[in-house]
Length: 382
Image (cartoon, rainbow, N blue to C red; front, side):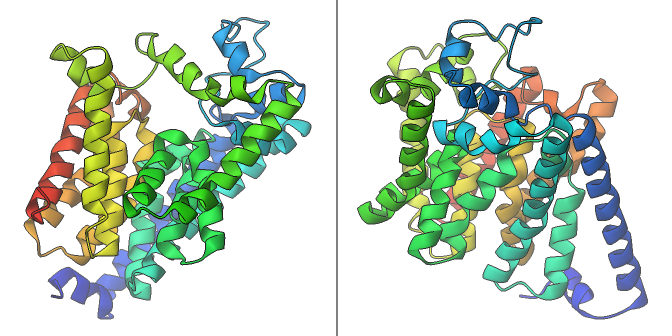
């Protein structure tokens, strides 16, 4: 069913042209601002961990030994904690060979490429019109979460791009490329669970190739026993998890409040996540399937605010099915993270990237969980 707004977008008129000019102008302003900030900040761009690896130093051991203390002698910059798989640090080694200023500029251009390419590829895959693609891409480019990704040199757009490969292209090469999303494992794991739910062992093996190559290359460069280095990314994550306030509020934080401890603290969310992704694999609408998988990733693992670019498929699905009540609620969720949090930040004198913590952190995680289960219940998956 065509909604009045979609009909309005398709039909040429002076009002529509003014709207298009306005959103295009705002999108350009947003992206320009993000690029400017990237040259000043890019604090999260993990060049310093790559530099350690290039010097033969195991960055995970560096952190686990307590050397990332932010002192004058600390070789890791800013919040570059190295919470990624081995291959990502190896992949970034070329950036450690050029100046910090040039590295920031190149990475911001790469992120800008992903910012445009991701929504365009998704819209093309799911048969949105050129006008709809222009509108939805502009909304994405205007979002706060997109600006934070570019401005702070984040790696989420890189991860999201490769994560989407098997959903957009049907080829063995796209499966191989999707393995690069495993480098940021709080996102990439969702793809792995999805492929497991499909029981496609050959596809899983293809996606693991970049991870295995990265792990072996890292072990060789840093002269670390491969068996020892294998679990070091997860040990580093647990190291930070034990430090109060370092990782964002998650479902684990919520379960701790109701006195869930020990093994069950990990088992319960993991079991729920596996169940949700298995149910999502049964959905015939591929765009909705992708939306649910991305939403479950945000609901069940720790995420900073920039990771909410994963709501893009939900934006596309809800726009297409706007006549549904669920879609209207979904769009409120998307716009809350894309825009409203920035407005709220002015009233509470905090920055958007602080929202994953404290009271807002609990609220955001519970809200994401509620919307996730609302969607899967609506289509009788539970």
